[in-house]
Image (cartoon, rainbow, N blue to C red; front, side):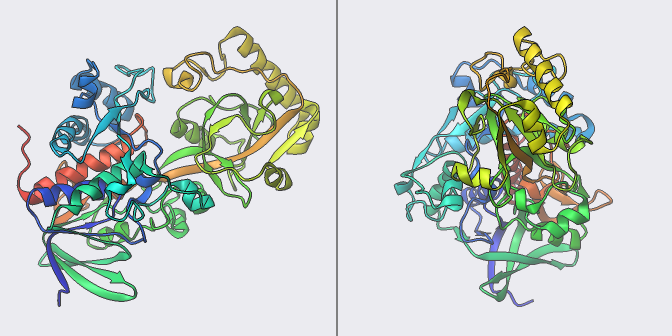
Amino acid sequence: MQWSDECDVLVVGSGAGGVTGAYTAAREGLDVILVEATDRFGGTTAYSGGGGMWFPCNAVLRRAGDEDTVDDALTYFRAVVGDGSPPEMQEAFVRGGAPLIDYLEADEHFVFQVLPWPDYFGLAPEARAGGRHIVPRPLRAAKLADGGESVRGPLGREWADEPAGDHLVGGRALVGRFLWAMEDMANAHLRLGTALEELVVTDGVVTGAVVSDGGDRRAIRARRGILLAAGGFEQNQQLRDAYGVPGSARDTMGSWGNLGKAHRAGIEVGADTRLMDQAWWSPGLTHPGGRSAFALWFTGGIFVDGAGNRFTNESAPYDRLGRDVIAHDGVDASDARFWMIYDDREGLVPPVKAPNVPLAATEEYTAAGLWRTADTLEELAGLIGVPAANLVATVHRFNDFAAAGVDGDFGRGDEPYDRSFSGGRSPLVPIEKGPFHAAAFGISDLGTKGGLVTDTSARVLDSAGAVIPGLYAAGNTMAPVSGTTYPGGGNPIGAGMVFGHLAALDMAGTRNDG
């Protein structure tokens, strides 16, 4: 093999797992090359509105008076995840967040703050209504050498050419802080427009990778190892179909570069995989052009299926709600289309306060048949093609629940998260003020979550459970530590960071579990 470049650690991908791994390896004294396939750094992490991390008992929470314990956090996580991932992986994640924050806060480039965000299974043992969640403090774009232009997002810029603003916030701030820190590290080399093509194996050890850059193929030798942290494969419809991932690449919120090349490269050298049919789900408000995008913070409305029947808790955490959509037989399997029914108390625009992407003009939704209006529920039923008697009965039943303050069908309002967008009040808002409206929804996702099986040091394992020397994985390229569940806000980003960090420490030989 003729090597074009050499380094100690090669990192593939620049989301939370990738930048954490690259930063850690460089800080530990290793020579690092990070390659990002697209034109900007950050991956799907950069699209996150909060950039949150689910890290129990970290110093940021402690300074705010948090009295949680790691044992309680483990009890909760294990109760929610069950046998969806190995117990030792769950423990490595839950215990790993606080030390990582200590590590980062020793560097002045990193500043975090508490953002209370309820755990997503509020009735599980040791769930916390205030959550275990922190976020990066916003970062002035001018702190970065290029003014933040190389950081992916925000969604408003990519969907509607909106200005990016003077500050990086949420996931952009998290990625930006890592980039800012690595600007001062001569041993950290970050490259855009450089895609992984295949891994190089020598005598059973992963020793490097072939990458493409502007059509040229080059081989990079990695003396200590390669960290695959290139996100999921949500943008690759062929792979979605092959693994049976519901939904469509059209409707994902994942970065456009998430095509599964890292998954394929790992599989080609013998990596085992788990949960490849899974994703981080959400309901998606359907926009002109047909794309359904992640939406939350509903201040009214109910969801009904093709028979005009309600089928879920509309205020549930988005992944749980999305899974209800997928599992429900009454939702059109061809495009997972369903309807939000709401009244006129807020006008025609649906009561969705966080569409996450810029809304088009109202007339575009009505012209596309995505928002429909009628003077009566019976007329509305005809417009959306559901039995009128069912829709009328469904709304009347829901209004009775709203009057009583208790959802007897789906428990809407029974958990702290359900009330997090209504100031603690009941989220049950009656549908009684005409005219009546319907808005089209579909199933969206924040990325696939199935990936390469690893151990607690993020070393990739083969189908026999043996380590593939020189190969590591983190983020959505790694099999999820949360199994088929989404335990709390900041779980995907947090897990990516912890295992990216542990991978780098293992390659540096500096991990200390004591």
